[in-house]
Image 1 (cartoon, rainbow, N blue to C red):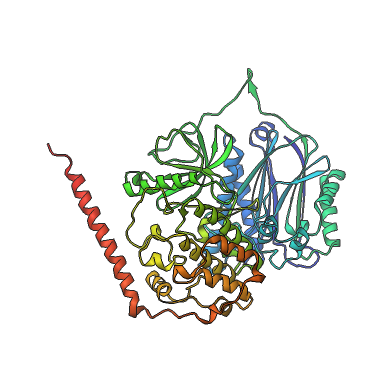
Image 2 (tube, rainbow, N blue to C red; image 1 turned 90 degrees about the horizontal axis):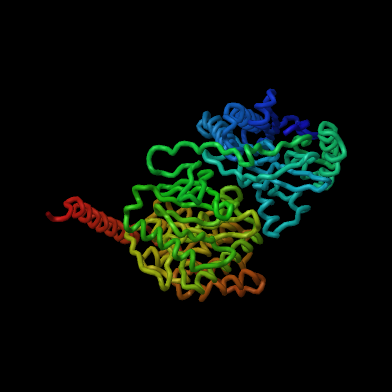
Length: 598
């Protein structure tokens, strides 16, 4: 691919310091250029954190160095994953040199150009556009709070540009030791333009203006014109833009009519799945999404449908655990009972060589991740999200499924403006087989969102999910969990929800409306019979908040009893259950060790 490239990065008309950084690299040798491709990079250091200009420069230089050092045999998608991981760790480790007291973060957009395709990776709210014959298309995804608001229809594009939350990112490079990027692939043609820019530019120059300028002028002239226009429109931020003009493209080579394939990488030692492998000749594993203490979730390509999917694979040591295997199987069984746009969809698999679950691949982030960036949420946003959660729960309850572990980590906010409820590992189905768990573990809920009846060891019903939904809504609008401040000890937290009520939401955040406070406290009544009779009723009140009748629930709240009075019973109940479980497992282990009689 032959390109003409230009860039311009400026502090802008107001700021003295430029926290943006841009870069571009391609080999000089024609054969290397053809096989390796070229790469463009743009980063915008996060304001408000320490050394934004260091973070952006470090991210770009690390990404470009990684690209230069890698071999051409790797796919652009694999290269992007390595480049982002390297850049993220470089920024994160630099911040940790000061024991984490000086956090650093930056946005990062990378575009790899090879053959007749571009592959775009991004984290943060810097943008990548493709302009073709005057038509402009955004290829990147905005990882920002206002971006989420726009997708949910909560705010207009014009209002987003002036919102107080405009600079709040939901993902950034260097924020955490692990990173999740979004990747977009597109075929390009001669005459196309690719534009990378920071929010200081696109927030003040309309997409149509960007398209018109880059199609009319040379890349260097277009960069100067776009920066000048943003300054005329009153930008107060740093300004960075890169324009790439596609002069020639080259399709992938074929030999005697057949495509040339590279040999797959050798299988790693051991039996754990790794990116680059194909599972059961159907699912090509492309990258690791997340890893827990029991399983790994991978992004993969379904070779039957050519669609992206998520594959959850337990570690080998847990596959022989009957309790874990039953829970794993039941999660999929329950998933197939449900069919709703706000509930995670499961993919049927006819043959499996080992236990695993396949679901749709979601582009987005969890509610927990969002709350790490914005606390509290604006009330109208929280109400909208809670309404959609209730809609999905109503479908589950109609089909006899109780989730029993609702928490922000199990709510995905998708970039298409929808949500998904996930993780049915401890859900209860009316017609499903029963699996018993002992002890206060994730199998019986998460302490911050558990209903009081779960703390007492009961299995719960629809009203258990209503309580958890109320607890999540409390956290969304207040900024802390309902019983935060009681203690870090989970037994103290569980004792508090059994013996008392949370602090009234309006005492912690006076901006919460009395009507929403009424809804939250109604959902979080200690006695199930005093909660909403159905999640549909709760959803109706959320959608007609102005008509909610105030009953003075906030005045009847009872403070939790001290831990010493009754909480120790909960602790000893839990300890007893754990001891019984351990004795049973020890007995089972000894039986298995003896083996069959001869």
